Length: 356
Length: 262
Image (tube, rainbow over all chains, first blue to last red; front, side, top):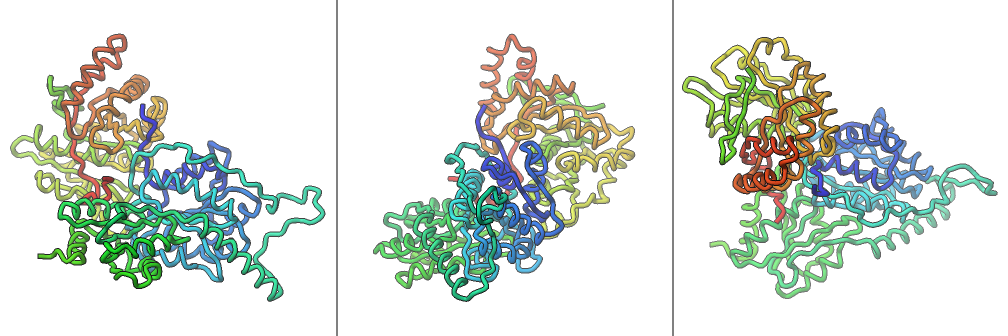
């Protein structure tokens, strides 16, 4: 029998977390990600862990804060409006330098929005969302297999940098099924957490987890320390996939599932003699700016076409990275709609000057 | 009288006279909706008599996504009537049992397929219709995909079957083997896992009614013949090699399947 099983994205998020050593899950149901909690209800009982349905998203994220402060591997998941509710807690977690994993299975917005897939939370995920000068590591998987691998990696990154890592998915990735193999991505790291609140244990000083600093200079020194850490993450942890970027005419760029539509369109364009490449950021923060700059400098590249399920969010980072070297165009769909292969191909033909 | 399926050798395609009303229940994500849509198409092609019509009822109250109402265009083309909650496939999540469902119990010229939501929670809908189904010619079938985590062992399938039967409040009629990894050629997967499903059939006392395949039936026939050659010691495996096959077309996904991995 094959080692693969057929699983839904939301189930894989939960299974990956358990396999990564997560034993505490706090959540509150919201479509399209409620299956994470459903799966956790059974699975956490099997591994002697805790699955708790909190009274609200605000309560759930503060339970995450508590468990993370005690050194546990902990996760919460939600969808867009629920992630908005968690933002205060996310900022506090960043301020207290706590490792935690938060998954956003994005639905369409703003407001209550709809239950269909969207990518309108890019700004919120990568530019803050909560208050203050902080960053989250943001990972954007494009398949169920990658969702497994990046969820495991999210726990490793969080522990390594004492940061919150967010998985930014979408309603389709959460709901769709694909074969997945639970191979060991890399040995699950056991990062020592001497800072955790596990009792004084004979030490002369007790540990403190806080995000309040009374004196301006101390607060500024802490901010500088955070920024130094974020610079180190930017130096070490950027992940990006480039496809057919050797000598392309047009560069498509997209994150998550939209990149898969792009891959199909690239084949259609090749049949028409248009060389199309793809840049897919896997880390949305830190953003792979250098990759964009290098490819923009290639003489063969005429233009960039950024595709998103929103009104134009990542395209701002693409434009900063390309820095005027080549034109950057945008193609977005919202409301839960997806761009068709045909409409993307039409856009490519126009940019390549191949319209009859 | 519930259905008595058989296969038309040598092509093994599904034959027989099914019950007037066929219900498909199963674990979450077992493929109930895809099997329901394709079974309704099979009814329309092979069973329907003049004066009869085929009706597919989307009674999934569990999940607003990937439901049989997604196949509306295909069903219309096949002349199959769809009864679905009014908000199916919109941004509004109010899964409810449509009142039109009662017509299938009252109108004896209808051949009906009822696609029930996943898990025991979904199967409670069957319990709520139990009074209307009393004395009717119905068959309650359970769809199993042994590549799904909860039903990847005979014991797992047995537990699932017990929970579904309890929630539905009705005796289950038989098992449909929908072994697949959502790939076109599921034949090796079906053959690999037949022993699991055949054993589950023994444990539950429910007959294995038919299996499903996508696309190329002839590969499956060859695989069954190879299996039969080595399965002589195992009555369960040998019986499984005589399993009728419902050849299916995928109907429930995004219209252009834009995410297909190339």
